Image 1 (cartoon, rainbow, N blue to C red):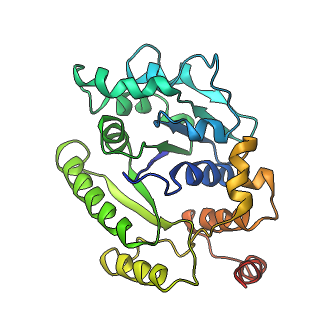
Image 2 (cartoon, rainbow, N blue to C red):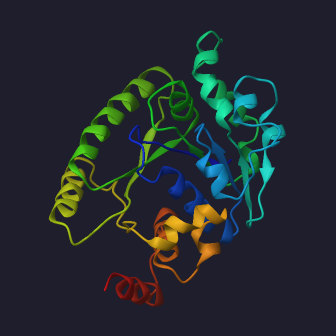
Length: 267
């Protein structure tokens, strides 16, 4: 049975889609079967895998409203072992349409249950708001991964997210847990970055990934080419650090060669 991870943070621009695309790509390259479910009407995960939205066919919107089964909305990508349930702007209307539906918080969960045995990992890219789409993602998942920036405003957003997780846990998904917190666009030269990391580690010991994703031009460029960064520029710093995050996600120790590459990239 595949593990389902929701990638969520109600604050936008923190690298949720970037993390989904690049972590999934690394896991796929390692032979794991990965499905990404794009639950954000912006469709950044969809375009990040080079999927053209025009004339796309069945999407996450159709799946949520019950117009198609989950397996009918799955598209293969050109990248190794990666499939996706894509999103288009239509998904924005689902927030309103779901309000009047039965089981409106559990519609994604019911669909995911029908396909989770087909994959090793299922990533749900949640929108940057704590509405019905995000609540569906949190109800459907086993764990939540939280990308965040190392800045003080991000701490307020994390507090709000934790409150939401408690509500979801008590009402819809009692087994929900924090899978990990990953810092993105990280700059080790800034005192505030280190201070925020220390603060988060204090309240969430053993939940903060050691790997912190730095700002990287190649990482920013890759989505415009419809490719994960490891397929766009495997030698880039962005590809290296998502490889490190992938190894940490899998619970693997870093070999000497990888440690040397990391020290060189941080120099």
